[in-house]
Amino acid sequence: EKNESAYRLTGVKSFVLDGHMSDLIIVLAKVNDGSGSQRLALFSVDSKAIGLTKNLLNSTDQTRKLAKLIFTDVEATCISSEDDVTEAMQKTFLKSCIGLSNEMVGGAERLREDTLEYVKMRMQFGRSIASFQVTKHKATDMLADVELAKSAAYYAAAAFDDGESDIAATASIAKASASEAYMQTAINAVQMHGGIGFTWDNDTHLWFKRAKSSEVFLGTADFHRELMMQSWDQ
Image (cartoon, rainbow, N blue to C red; front, side, top):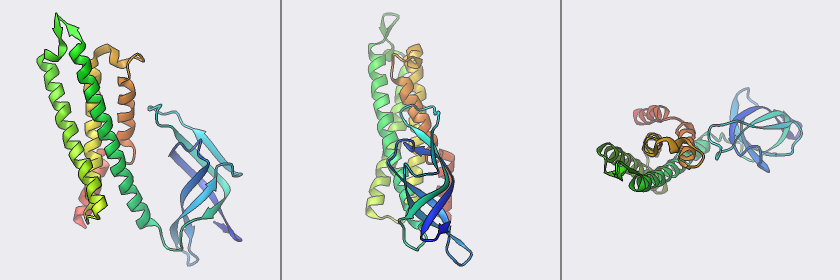
């Protein structure tokens, strides 16, 4: 709400990336536009503002810190115009999904490569386990999943740069494909590593946790398939 010349924010924001250590926080919030209705606006809040509480959350992925921010009558500065910022935030969301999709594809590719190196040197019954048929099948599945997701992620990035009209559907396809490919690659990687894949002596469990957190971050595969269908129906 607006108090004299300043805005005051009250509410809760959960799962904020690095929110516990940020110096400046950008908040998307609803404000009254004077006609009885509400619009979305962007505000900047100093991390040391009175009334702001920052709590670090326990999360599966220790490499991606998440925080819960509690605003209690916190002074804020409006940094957006009088126009509703919904369209701008939609564009930001799509760009974030595309960026995350490409990060996930890169992670899946690195995990696949590391796993192949491991099975080549891991010996069992007098030969490398990479020569076993079941290992070859999993390696083939990993390659197919990663390459398909990579194509979707690369195309989405190019479509965004070119200003394609179907960017909403393209971004959702990329996120859905990358989510499933990264998670399935991580599952196969743990299985192909065997017991050591669960231990702190090997990085596979870290990749698995990042794959899981990325799978749900900014929307699951099912969520993005629904968005894709909605964008095509419009």
